Image (cartoon, rainbow, N blue to C red; front, side, top):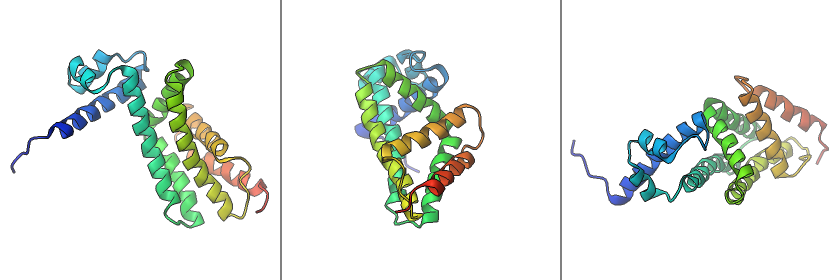
Length: 198
């Protein structure tokens, strides 16, 4: 098999992917401040020069990582909403969203780290909250449609629904519950049962 050389753009993307993975692993294990640029570059197999060829700072890498992380979540949730799914499929879509968190605890830990950064860094906060808002609209939209398909009114706006279920699922995972989907389903069912009819 003939190996083709990577083009400049492809090589840069490959470098960025490795830096993203190294940054994720280190920020999950050490936190944002504990993971230095040198640590990230070394773990990815590159020099600090290669790091700074791709990102102006660690904060810029964190923002790009946040955009990537939240983008995947939004895409996954939007695909469920746009699939003209049945009520059962919509509920399953929410369960799968929670299961994806369960099977990738690093994402939950990274999201908490990003929330802490947004709380502490006024320059980073607007970027994080803009992406978080998009994600909340998508997740809240899915939950709202589940209520609608069951003939009920959602008891709060989409972003508030999303915040409730994100806090519940992430909080249960961080407390060590192996499967947060079950109690989240129970909370959702209880809320639907008590909601006002359409």
